Image (cartoon, helix red, strand yellow):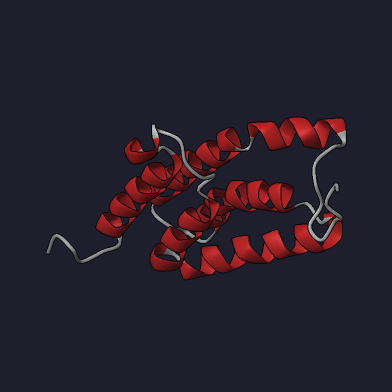
Length: 126
């Protein structure tokens, strides 16, 4: 029964996240992979996805920083998966995805530390 558990979905989902982040069709550039990783979590562990998305919304409501909410939600996913008793391979893959998301947010981290990161709903410069 090779497709009897979520392992295949997790593996293919992880490849989708990496492909989104470093697409060979875009010169190995791409997005920050947050939404794609959330989609993988929705398929593999809806409860972890809900907790992570809830944390994202909470951080966004408090700080108005989408990037900070995205990174904290990604970091919380493997922790939540471990606490909720998911298999070790799920926790490991979520940890790798969280590290990728944090890595892709390096410029945002620099702007957050400098106090120049844009806030959600903030005014655009003319």
